[in-house]
Length: 199
Image (cartoon, rainbow, N blue to C red; front, top):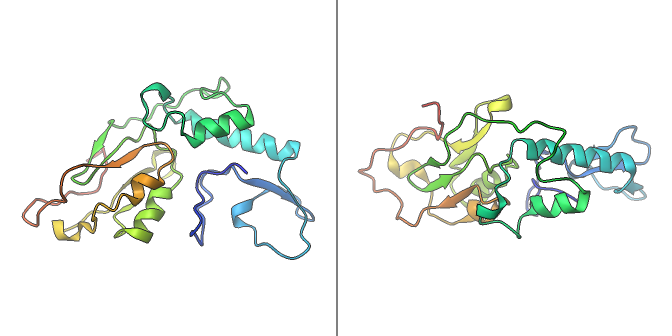
């Protein structure tokens, strides 16, 4: 079943990708599978025409804000977006939706990692990985169309709570975030503000 935002240990999926739609008997509308509690005797359809239409629309929406520069991307040929596009029969550069141009710098530098927002599909996997395995440094910043992944503001470098565990990098399906090879900043270093290009 197509999905981007779910990981195995997640108890409350963000339902951000909207790719896992299913039809459940006695439920009038398709629902995201990651939010449906399994119960005995339930009848679930995963590949109806209506489900596939919704999945294709959701994928096109994700791709409309994603720079499909596959040749230069480290995730090329190991990319879930490529796999899903092939599975659902969707072009990586959809014709129906105009490519969305976000006014953000590329890349965005943080003392501990580099983030490339034009690759990011806002699945939230890195945020979950950071909260679960790291110190909760990553979060969503801004709202609505301008939403980005960013770093929480801190008062001192010791509060960065990042040991370079690589969980966020491993969780990202589109190679939008990667840990720098340098050591975490010393306590004397000036701490960064939010990873926000408007600042």
